[in-house]
Image (cartoon, rainbow, N blue to C red; front, side, top):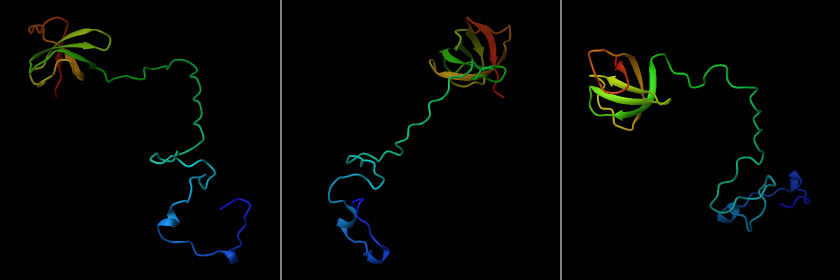
Length: 135
């Protein structure tokens, strides 16, 4: 309805029904005054831009990606069904892992494992010897 036309409550008429009632005769602005979305595209949720976040005052005081003590994350470099595996952590440190109950670890997989000091009697190759904790 054009904006300069006024309708009084007494002069209102029943809303039309049928297919023509829900389809505008020609494309035009939506009821809110914003342009209608092109056919096949959803209507934008808001024309208001979100606020720009402020720059942090400095680096975080504590690491934001801290893991529990004894948990190491990295990529499996020597995989298989065990009991020996190889892992390189996110800092490039190489580990020689022993885990008879760890199951299959695929080479190239990114994993987070709980580790404990390894047994010096077991040699699982190059790297810091560690044992995979499975319980």
